[in-house]
Length: 73
Image: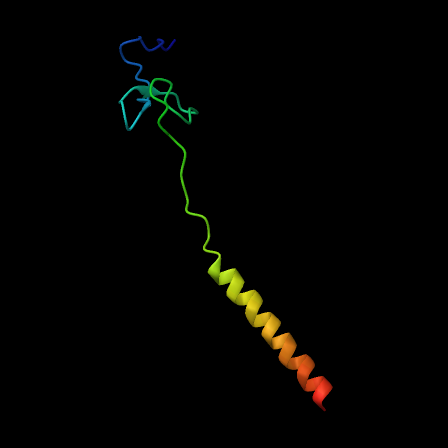
């Protein structure tokens, strides 16, 4: 019969640490409980508004040109 591993041989994975204060954080913890710094939140910059605005402007211009071509002929 196999023996159960003793407490000394079982190693638990090291938890994550807070980047600001170094306090240990749980696996599903998003913010440090001591200092409030982000532990696992990933910040992405919002998309730039200029690209969608340029696409909308291009579509409006093409529609206006098409309408002008149809009314002019």
